[in-house]
Length: 119
Image: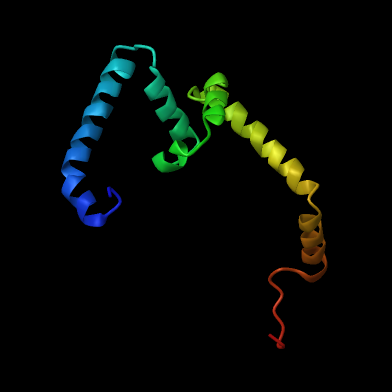
């Protein structure tokens, strides 16, 4: 029901007020007063670091969220290390993928942007 446009337009001012309250409390507690992050704030920072929307993050399995919490991905340094590690794993997987090898050979021999009069 909340995904309907007119409902969202009607509740928009209230939602903006709640967001403003949350961000102001976050700023005061964790930037000014240097209090430690709570679970909600940690999950928010993990979600922002992973560049996920709230609905995408909501549909993750609990085991995956627990793994993110165990890895302390809300900390910037830890997240950067995790991101580099995942990129390396992805590069290795792509290097061993037979379809991608075939495509790279085709690009090498025929080129991607080659245009002929037959086209």
